[in-house]
Image 1 (cartoon, rainbow, N blue to C red):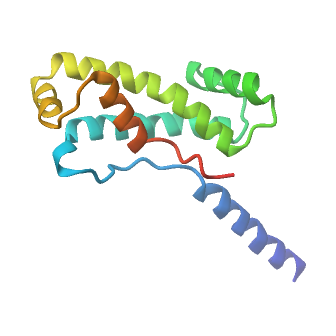
Image 2 (image 1 turned 45 degrees about the vertical axis):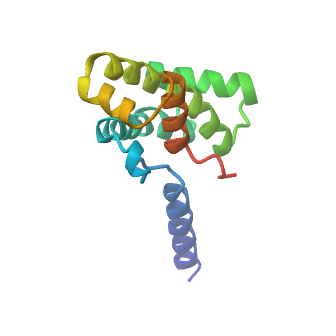
Image 3 (image 1 turned 90 degrees about the horizontal axis):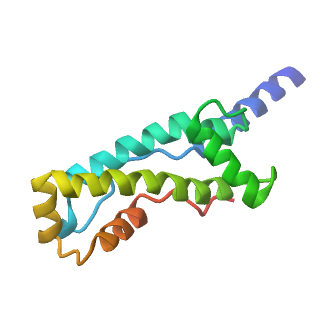
Length: 144
């Protein structure tokens, strides 16, 4: 009977831990600012980032690649080894959106469809585009 209770409790804890991992999906937007090419690029990058960087650092596994090392070092500098998921989310926003900004600059420079869509969406500057998408695709910093 005790083993059964233990297994149920362990299963619930595992489900709770797994459910707090973010998952990137295309967000709904104003129709005037809907640029699918940008949305899909960000979602693909974010899902890759979550799998290759976020999850291992969340589990506090030793870093195995550049992304994990950079994230772990940022967390350690800011919060020492006592970082929470909220801290992980804030640091991930900083690192992840550096990469997104570079890819977005490249798209705006080389993809005429994206350039035209940004003009139609009434963005006044590249910084406004970055801020808009960072706000839409931020990691959930409300988790404690």
